[in-house]
Length: 318
Image (cartoon, rainbow, N blue to C red):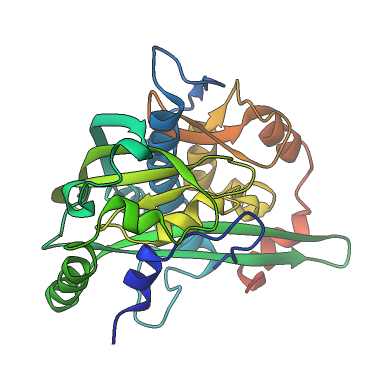
């Protein structure tokens, strides 16, 4: 039976509103400046691609913190990571998260490549990743106050050799005889632009290089971005739509943990285009995502109920 992950990779994204979501040493504070529009001649397509992978790296870092402080290092029974009190362990795990280099961009009209084989734009991987999008509603309170908030994150893992071999065969079978035109023909909305590029990814000290392709709807209000990355997989589609503001870290007593506070401070953005919103801003030039500084300041200005400090381990994540 074909894996759900790969079938989703080749599924045509639904029109807007139809796609369902699945569950998103010392650090010195720096305030990043985010460009509201692509700069230095970068096309909007390239900027979108770069922001997508920047969000992936950011979401994986949030995942390290979320699992440490909300789940005591174990989101699932077979998972073991650093706990909230293990600052050195959390910093080591943060350093292992994906480092993604993108280059060799080609941008153009889908009509110009519709007769070309899909296989010429992507890589049939021998190794591959498993991307897990996750999230939780979190509540903590006392007799005086209650805080209910949310957090979404991602986890990127290497597949086992057996999983990777099976996945590679599925990719080959599905792409070897298909053209770009045949790929987009079933789409409910027209896809008019494309970006092809190469990726060099490092995760947990191991690296992989490959090619990927993004397709862009003719009308962004009616269709969704279509990332075709055969190494990371179809869950990139979900990640592009996930709300990634880490409310459970910023708006609760968890922000007082030194490693969490250092991470928040190093991801505050002074010129975020979406001012005053619980959103994530990304800079395609630097590949860095962060949080609107004004929004963080406002959240930090709301005092933490001191009683919830003692109740912190009893907070409930679902």
